[in-house]
Length: 489
Image 1 (cartoon, rainbow, N blue to C red):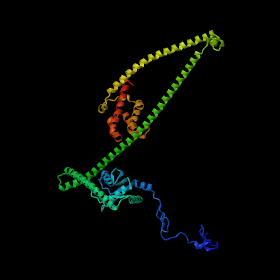
Image 2: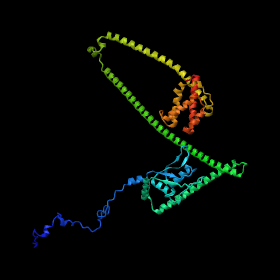
Image 3: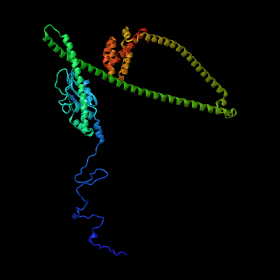
Image 4: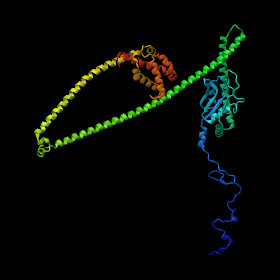
């Protein structure tokens, strides 16, 4: 046996032992040891605890990704007079991708020296600001776009303060090292310098051409001084007129392209809607055919069941038994049954004769309209072949305006015009644009105006499709007038 004996219960070494932590003011500082350094967490952030540790907010990567792809609208100013939108877009697209460039125009349609550009992302906007802007750009002194008239304007790209913070934030998150960024910007600066040199050469060539024309037409016998003064004045006025003409041509081309794009979108939408309606009608027709087929099948099956039942009954029929039972009227009173049967048979024969006579009358009546319909069809086909298809010959055809009355216009010509316009513009019958153009075309026809004037007026809306549209409508008017005059309607 061991000689070990446990200490007494009142011993100090036994009183303070146990799982419960001692309480009291003298034990307040006795806890986990603190050495002034934070504890390490092997499963997460190394700063698990400590006096200097701070909680870091969670990173929202989706928000950062959305910010990087957010379009940025910037204000572009300092565009010299005479610089077209083509050159401005070329400069902006050199620095980054853009969604649109919109230049502000005055009330009389003259382009101003500023506008708004929508960049695809903050990185594209930041690149343009670094390369092109006069304040934050890499070009010392900024960029001055060449122009016929000397100017001190510098190209400026400005954004809102909040947008500027967003651009800076995206640049901090996505940009590589500063040396790589500088090299990329230097390449963009070289590209911009090349574009400006091309613009300067174009401006010089335009000015020399205008000066040559003005000097050739401004010679006078009053002396060289007067000649030079007139040439300078004419050159300046010619430059202004040339700029206005170029601006108007660009604006007209842009309007035509916009109308063409809008018409194409409306045409596609209308075609899709018509396709959906056609599919719905086809499905409805298929369901109706299927229902009729099922009904005919059920009727055929019912008749077959009745024939089978009659065959079974007749196969088991016994005249002696039925005569003894006397349930059928034939066996109860045969003479009375025969009188009723003769009367029913007479009525059936009368109905059969009436049906036969009706069929003969219908056959005779159908032969006459068939011949009349054939003759009318031949006249219509001959009239259609007689009307020329060539627009020049068609427009020279003498229309019988005395036959084109209000009743004909409202019943046939106006619906045809509305239908054709809906096809060309891609709209429906109740569309306001279709209604306005339809009223205009109908008024033109009612006033007996020539077709060429209608083509000139509709070119702003239908562009190159205006001659084709007018030719189709005019051919329809010629046909209706000739059909009423020859009585083949």
